[in-house]
Image 1 (cartoon, rainbow, N blue to C red):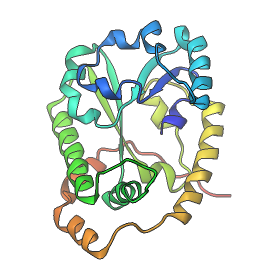
Image 2: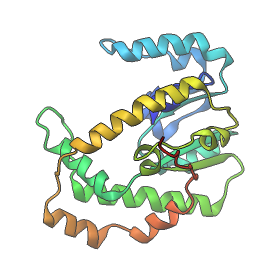
Image 3: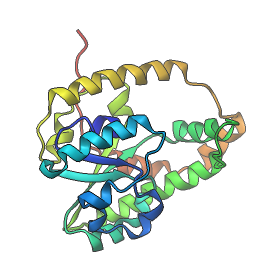
Image 4: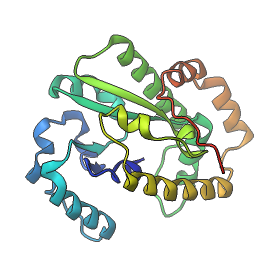
Length: 227
């Protein structure tokens, strides 16, 4: 999702720039000098992106960050920001739990969270988001986007960017065409990291009613007919 959003010329988006400071994010974190005051040593792709983003910074509409677990801090965002747009990417628990397990079983990764933790965090993110949406906010808007809607088949992205008040652009469309091709290749190669026992645990413990409730609030993206 980060790669897609950063293709738009009116968006500058950090990649977990403030992941360790998410409990106390303030508007001044997104001022130019503070935002680019970071060590990117050895991260060539990010160095290139941040160099380009710095040149565009003064003229963009949105400056933000990709922050996992931001759902835990909606009230803090509401209190600290006069106007905030949050994109919540909703994915099915089977693939989320499989991703947790794939990383946990990878000896090169220091990830320690298993499928049970996936169910717990997935459920918490959904229930917290539903409560915040039900409460309503004058300063924070949450845009729910289905991961599967976005990546299983090509869709029209105009409603996504229109919800942010931005026009669709050829650069975004080109990036999306590339990314969805890669996503479909990955889908065909996806391994099975869940056992029957873990799938049973998911079936018994995942809050599927809450998932369906949040899914019903997602941004609708029309599938583009294949030629």
